[in-house]
Image (cartoon, rainbow, N blue to C red; front, side, top):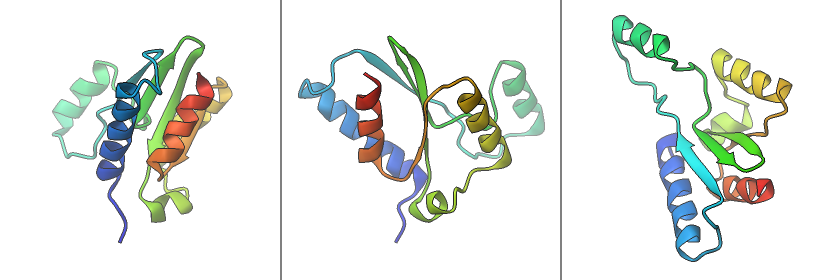
Amino acid sequence: MSISESQKCKQFVKIVNNLKCWRQFKSDFILLHVPNESIKPTMEYRRHLVAMGMVVGASDYLVLHKNGWAAIEFKRDDKAKRNGLTERQKAFKEQCEQLEIPYLLTCDPHEAVEFIKSLL
């Protein structure tokens, strides 16, 4: 059975927080969750969010660190294997690549932790 993207994200944050507690990660990066879950807001509220700067298709997490930033997108196992990005997620990923911003598409929280370690 596949674990949901939300469960993967929660597992990832728990691992990162545990590593920080055990000082395997210093406080040399900031992990930001982009609240872009696929809730069904009204069109008026969606326009309001976009007007405030919401980027449709942005990755689940942004990692800010002294050398720049990176993006992490989680997918369920089966979707990640098929590169299950929406058209807007693909556009965001391409924009990151054009700007030479590291981007990880994964279904494995441990892979995401190793990705962060490689940035620091």
